[in-house]
Image (cartoon, rainbow, N blue to C red; front, side):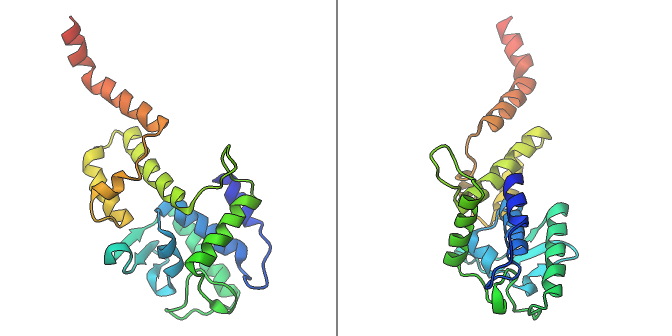
Amino acid sequence: MARLLAYVTDLPPGSRSPLRAQVMRLAVVLLYTAGLRRGELVRLTLADVEAHSGVLRIRESKFHKSRWVPLSPSARAELQAYLVARHEAGLDERPAAPLLCTAGTRAYSCAGFYNSFKQLLRDAGIHGDSGRVPRLQDFRHSFAVAALLRWYETDADVQSSLPKLALYMGHVSIISTAYYLRWMPAVVSQASARFARSCAGVIDGGAS
């Protein structure tokens, strides 16, 4: 992620995208730290943004659900910096204007954003051993797994936190959320350590 952010930060402006670097940097931040769907990201308007508090309104997304998405302090700072750059560029600031925009304050289409982002990943050399670049959906997976890992690291109640994650991600139930929670080695390690701490006495007692 650090490598990708460094790459997009230095992108030159394009004839159709005067704020190309700023747009793509904010897109990376929101995909990775807020777990947004691609369509949710490109449909955001200025009216959906509460910059001071760092909250996004996601309107009528999948399953016709709307929700509020609070951002982390660092993501909020990125959003505020982007809005300053957007203002200085003299772009449309009416409430209905798209948050992420190209020349003429046009919104990105889902397909257009997807293709542009995949090309950025290729240009930045971000790919797996097979040469495949990450899917946009992989950022959403990473967000969910990172949340699970933080809960284990802070000894939080994972089971009671899962409904909160489902709500944040716009799922109708935790069953949908579970699809994103791949059993990663770091999570396995944390879960095993927690089990050892909480059940060591029982195991020792049984062994004796």
